[in-house]
Length: 397
Ligand code: 3PG
Ligand code: MG
Image 1 (cartoon, helix red, strand yellow):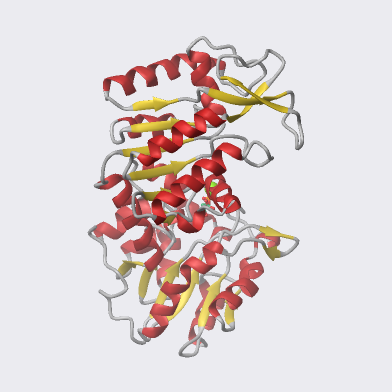
Image 2 (tube, rainbow, N blue to C red; image 1 turned 60 degrees about the vertical axis):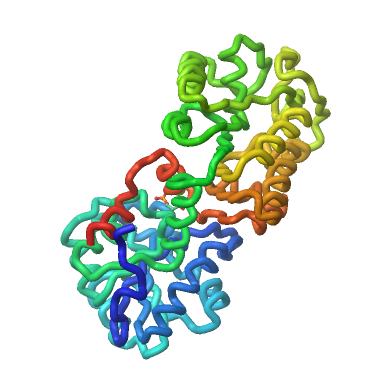
């Protein structure tokens, strides 16, 4: 951990360009989940307490280098004001005269949000001139956007080369949780890897096999592993062209002494619909006209036993099609078991990824997990063992 924190740089009277990730869900002009906003509050408050002037840099959506009015960060102002308990000033542009004037007018104790960095093509290109234009507005750079750190963009990477730079509190918390879970974890370590497709989780499985003691495979990707064992999965979601790869993963896991845990029983239905008639069958007995939509009760018990024998849990991806009940049953029961073990001090549990967090929130398990990441793609890339450019640049600063 070679990076500096807010405690290592003098912030008094300084304009602190603070990269945050407030790429939050919005419906009908309103923020529907303010979690990411709540999680950056400590950083902004610490900067203020140290006499600094927080100027927030952020992206919103994917406007691809053009001004797209529907992707203005203005929509986040009410939620920011509610969480931070004060008026938030706003500038129509993140660089140039509008930004400079707003910074000049920012009173002590004030907070300024700059418009979407992705309205400029230089942002995603990590264009050095655009990074310079961003850096020109402030004195210090603080990156608190772990969830955007897998992007080498001007506001996440280029700018850190130009200003004294540090990690914000949320960035610190994310990195330290991940370090505890996979860097130097207490063993045994169990990973839950779920999701629709094996093809999107190949690198993840490849990295985890060498680092954890067991992997619970859930969601649609479990069907591909079942098919690789010659099991007929009926109408289930399954990547039949990936069964060869699934076999290779199984062989690699065996060689590395990592147990791959597939469901012994499954919940099947004729269609993926609320209220569809569901039944539990053995994993090798899916009727030809049905599809597997969740792990069954025996499989869930087995997962709970593995959790009970573990000291560390890393979770990415649900066990079933949790969006529609009753196919949330396995995910919920396993998550609640992990939450209970965590509360009892027996398990360190870390989860991340959009779907995962939605599932853990829905079951009420999230609040008892040791750490729930705000990151989707960045969490996955970290678990894959990749270097995150936004973190690496802070380490070399
Ligand atoms: C996210 O919401 O996962 C981050 O803000 C990154 O957004 P992106 O995938 O558009 O880069
Ligand atoms: Mg994303």
